[in-house]
Length: 192
Image 1 (tube, one colour):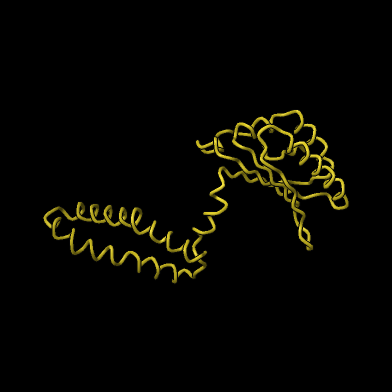
Image 2 (image 1 turned 180 degrees about the vertical axis):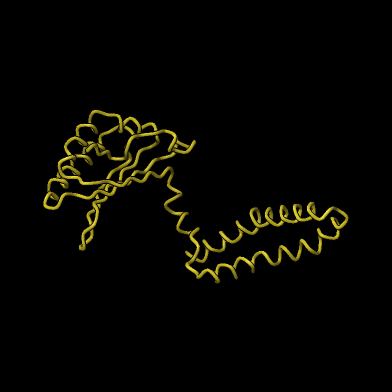
């Protein structure tokens, strides 16, 4: 089994803003009884990474008391430096050693730092289906009323299908460009 720290590198997986720092997290399942070997290997990886050009840091997180995967986190200044690491002979040698005691790995790449801090703030609070429907209707209702009072009289002479398209486009645009950002802003303030 060939196991990689962050999988085969594919530049298409990184956004066009590849000059931003790239954080890689890897969750690994270790063969029971070989945890000490894994920890020694992880220290070697951290030592090697800390000397590698472009590495901003690396660390190992142990599983909780109930078990689980071992977590490995490292960060590079950009996607090109990460690519250098992933194609390096140092990494290849380390990965060859890991094959004896690593069962599986799960990899996540994050470009930039903002995703760590902004994404949880954008999360929708848990609600039932009906709760979400009522909330959405409460946000759409004033926009639909305004559209009916202001726009509908001006387009009343147009054919029915054209009126529906114009109304739908207008309501969708207002919801996406005005109401959506407002909801996100209010949600992020509520979660702080």
